[in-house]
Structures are given as structure tokens and as C-alpha cells.
Image (cartoon, protein in one colour):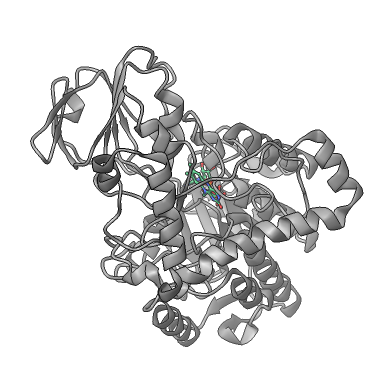
Length: 497
Ligand SMILES: Cc1cc2nc3c(=O)[nH]c(=O)nc-3n(C[C@H](O)[C@H](O)[C@H](O)COP(=O)(O)OP(=O)(O)OC[C@H]3O[C@@H](n4cnc5c(N)ncnc54)[C@H](O)[C@@H]3O)c2cc1C
């Protein structure tokens, strides 16, 4: 039994424990399905994996880090999350190898009951921190199972597959391919890159940050704030035209210039030029992707893959390409909350059913009918330029203030009012209508439900932080009183852990 159960021990789950303790909530359990914390940065081990926002923005505000580079690599980020967790003794409350199978709200006792692979738990409140990039998207390719070589998803890199001297087929040209192609190209005999949709790519101004610079920044915290501020405002400057597409031309011109400077071949350049507007899909930065595509052992195949036959990858254009290894860089079910079909609210309905036609959440955090439940990086909270830790910390200020208010009120539960949720949805989708996320022609990249953008926040990062700054008690229904309610020791005859 716990006051708060946090599901997931990635960057967000770790931040949640620290924020809850700071707010005076100590009775916490974190349920993590894996045997190690770190989420994204634990699971994604592909060569070249790293941050695509400046690392100074990809850190907890309370734990500034002496990053070795402007854009840190995956192992440094994982190390940072683990070190921060150790410093704050987060490990103590994590139950590893405990995958949450179901979470049910019990209206009789106003508590959540959670079934996991290692026991049953009960909690007054639940924070879902299972991450929007957790589930790799596997393409449904006929013949893939019978491929004669080795095939794996880039998010679960098979390090036993030595690519030295092999023919590699890469399926997809998203953010991961952009990072690993320059790393695998020098080793492989040949790489065929299958591209169904070209990307807009901006250069990545990566550079090492020396220990001397960090000593200076430690001595002069104002200088670090200024550097961080510069990165923040650069990201915001890129974000502004995404909301006002009439301002996009300079960004598109910069991306075209980058392409022209990196790729001398006109036909290849043409194949790499997107037909949709900048920002219509996830933003990509790299200074090494285009040069890798120009190497003699790399061939861009501007076609969708339709099937695999024996040792050949079949393109929609009819091409047959021999491969020893297939890397499926086909992305993630973004914004998907896999737990949604195992979370049961007040009327016994799963969140997945409630969300069948739209993933509604008040401020991306609370869903009506799911009391005392909070989603970290829930629907419509990301902009493409905002670093995730900024969003998570803003949400945690909101959530901890909701929980401390719940505690001090003596109430048993708070549940967001449907009208408040609906008003937020109206404003949000109204504002999204004119953004490039919705109008850019990026084939519904951000549309988690057909026709509905379930991913993007249509305003600035500043407005997101401001909206989440003040908890809005009037937006919620409060159920009194908690004190009279019994605390169960068993659920369905099973003893609570
Ligand atoms: C390759 C890659 C690069 C990225 N780069 C950036 C970047 O540059 N900037 C940026 O802002 N964001 C980036 N992201 C997004 C990144 O996912 C987030 O920044 C952040 O790591 C999310 O942390 P999280 O804790 O919310 O989720 P995750 O890191 O996904 O962690 C979720 C945790 O929940 C656990 N879990 C899931 N389901 C269950 C269950 N049923 N029961 C128990 N535990 C469960 C998982 O095992 C995992 O440990 C990137 C994502 C990827 C995949």
C-alpha cells in the first residue's frame, strides 16, 4: 500500500519521486517493468544514439550537469539519470521487474488497485510515467519472419550482429537513422537506405564542452544561466514559425542550404527534398547524415518497403535489394500509452476506450473519470522544440500541488470536470488548426487518432510552464471525506504488498 504509485522509472519517474518527496509525500512506490531504470536511454543502444536538443536543456533544473558535449550521447544521459537517482535515493522505492498489468479505480474505497507481475499494490494516487516513445513500431512486412539474414528494430539494437563487411538494409529515415547511419556506414560493405518520406534536416551545432569551460560555468552560475538561456531561446525561435507557418521560409531556406552544401548530386538532393512543410513531422538535426548518404557504399532508395523475400528487400518501386542485415528504423508508437488498455476508471471503462476518438486530457495531465491519476507527458504537451524535462518538471509542480491539496483538504479523490476538460480540448484543437503540425502535410505524423493531433501543444514552452504553474482546484470535482474510508488489506482475496 502506498500514498502514490509511480509507474515507470525513466527520466520522468525519477523526477516524480524527487518532486513528491520535496512536496512532503514520502510514501511512494515506483513500479518498473525492467530490471534497471533509465527508460529510453536504457533501451535505445543503437550506435550514435543521443540527445537532439542541447543537453543543457535536457537536464533536471535541480541537477545541472557538466555535459561533455553540447548534444550528449545516450550513455552519458543514462549515467546522469542513474547518478541523480542515486544522489536522491530514488532506488530505495523502485520495485524492479514489476510490470503493471492492470490498474483499477475502486470507487468503494477511493483507491487504485494495481496488479503487477510481482504482486498487487494499492495506492491513493497514481502517476503514469511510462513514456511516449516506449513502444517500437514494427512494420507489417510479408516475408520478414522468413528473412535469411538478421533483422532487428533500431530501438532494440542487436549488438551480436556484426555489420563489418555486411550488406545492410535500413528501413526508414527518421531521427534514429540520422544518428546511426554515419556510425555504421564506415563498417558496412554496403548500406541501402529505404526512405518513404524525406525529412527536413537542420545542421547540428555539436561541440565538446571542456572541463575548463565547466569550471568557469561553476564559478559563474550567471554565465551558465546565460548559455542555457541562449539554447532555450534558440529552440523557441525555431518553435515560433511552427505555430505561425507564414514565418517558416527562413527555416526552410536554412535546411535547403544545408542539403545543397552537403549533397552535390542533384538527383540525390531532389530525392531528399520533402514535399511537405518544415515542421510537418518531427524536427531533425544532424551535420553527419547527409554526408554519410553521399559515401560510395551508401545508396538511397526513395521507396517504401513492401515485403521481404528470402534474402531480398522488395521496394514499392519493384526493386529487389540483397541484404545480410535489415535494420527496422521504423520509429515508435509515439504518444501512445500502452497502459491505456489496462487502466480502468470510475465506470470500469479502459482509458483506451475512453480515448477511442480522441486522447483527451486536461492540460495533458488529468482525464475525467480517472480520479487521482496523473499522466506525465500525456497527450498534447510537446512542441517538437521543447525538451522533455521542462515539460515533466512543469507537470510535477502541478501534480504535487494537486496531491498536497488533496491531502490537506481531507478529501478522498479529485477528478477533473468534463466541462474543464472539454474547454481545454476546444481551445487546444482550435489553436492547433493553423499550426504547421496540422497543416504542413506531414501525412498526419502527429495524429495518434485518425484526424486528431494528439501530440502537440500549440502554444509556446513559456505558456505551457505558466499554465501548469498554478493548480486549478475549480477544474476538479472533490470527493469527501477520506478519513471515514476503510483502508483495504486485501483485494479479490489477494494480500496487498
Ligand atoms: C532515441 C530517442 C531519442 C530521444 N531524444 C530526445 C531528445 O533529444 N530530447 C527530448 O526532449 N526527448 C528525447 N526523446 C524522448 C524521450 O523518450 C524523453 O525525453 C524521456 O526519456 C522520456 O522519459 P520517460 O521517463 O517519460 O519515459 P521512458 O524513458 O520511456 O521510461 C518509461 C519507463 O516506464 C517503464 N514502463 C513502461 N510500461 C510499464 C508498465 N506497464 N509497468 C511498469 N513499467 C513500465 C519502462 O520500462 C521505462 O523504464 C528521445 C526518445 C528516443 C526514443
